[in-house]
Image (cartoon, rainbow, N blue to C red; front, top):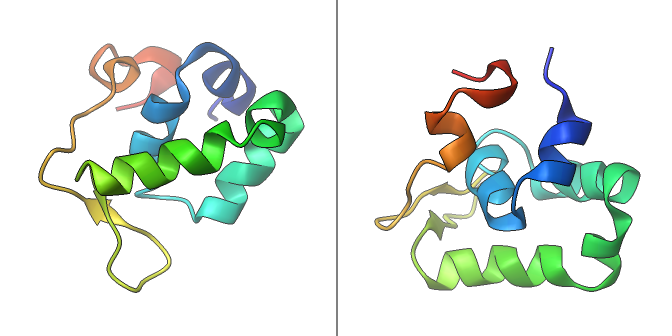
Length: 87
């Protein structure tokens, strides 16, 4: 079982979005931040980071609930290091 609290509190917003956006709809990610790191949502950082990732080509929206990897997508460091039991 993933420790969402540790991931949200310890990893950058960009890295969390790069990993979870491909698997989890944005409203669910927003709820994770509301629960574990509210100031990211309250300040607008979460939505602005998501929009920036789309503009930079790291995520690509295509009319579906989940975006795809964009041409400039990269695996977040916490995935490469296999932290939190992720593979």
